[in-house]
Amino acid sequence: HSEQACGLSGLWDIRKPCMWGSMWYWDVNIQSSFYGAFASNHMELAKVFCDGFLSYAEEIKAFTKRFYKKEGWALDYPHPLYHCIQPWCALFLWQYYAYTGDEAFLAEKAYPVFCEMIHFYRQIGRVDEEGIRHIDYDICPEQGPVTRDSTITTAVLKQLIVYTAKATKILKRPEKELQDLEQLLSEMPEYAITKDGLRWKDSTLAADDVFLRHPSVLMPVFPAKEVHMESSVEQRNLAENTLR
Image 1: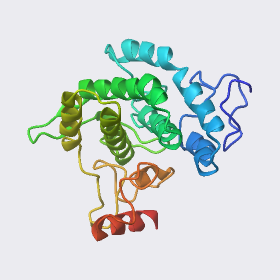
Image 2: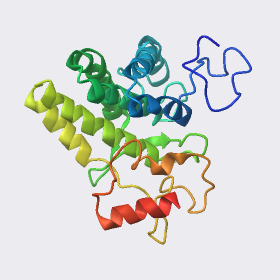
Image 3: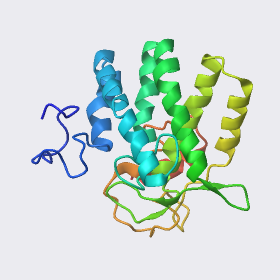
């Protein structure tokens, strides 16, 4: 259908519109469809994604007020409690800036969205007695269970905060903004690992042997880029064991 971003990984678009009202599949399908635009240096296609994503701004803000009674840009539109969705899509905005160097795009389009998402996260995050900020409740796409601090959400939010901090320096924003972001980053929870300590898992509340229907636990590797070949041996082993 013309409303869709592009052809996607499955024949799910047999009804119009789909059951959640959007013809976009806000998930790994969008990543698999659009990340090739960066690798092939077709920024005109990456721009199509960015423009399409940003076109939902008013709907997302309305959802935030209606569902949460809060301001900002909800992390889970259009699937309530799937808090990885919107920051995951927002990573495309940073990638577009990184590949093009378009500072006006960063200042006028990407950075305001990053700030809206982080503002929402500060409102819904619960800080415990040890100063760790939690999201209750959270769901990993297609998998579950309903949980706290899923690996995918934690990883993508951390990366969003890292990119936003970089943007504050590029755009010469007030120093206080950077300090607040660094504080927020220090409050992020650790990733859940299995009892044997060998690999990441969906979340602390998930069973070690939960069937993985989704690449959520690899978010720290890609596209979040937190764990890479120059990471510690311990981190690389966790990533490799999880992949295997």
